Amino acid sequence: LSWVVMFTQSRSPYIEVVQELAEPILAPFRRIMPNMGMIDLSPIMAILALIIIEMIMNQVAIVLLTGL
Image (cartoon, rainbow, N blue to C red; front, side):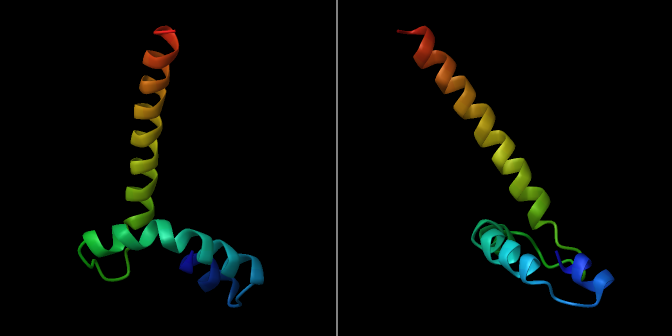
């Protein structure tokens, strides 16, 4: 979200809340990903991880519900 602040030149309280909510999710990916200067790929990795988790949970739900 730093690019939003960069273009608006001010820090909105809404942006700060979103950053505080996103940081616990993004922090593990920032530790894993190599430093690429100004480019932060952790949001992309977090979204991919959430998509994979969703796919796994859908498959588990299908197996459990069809087994009833």
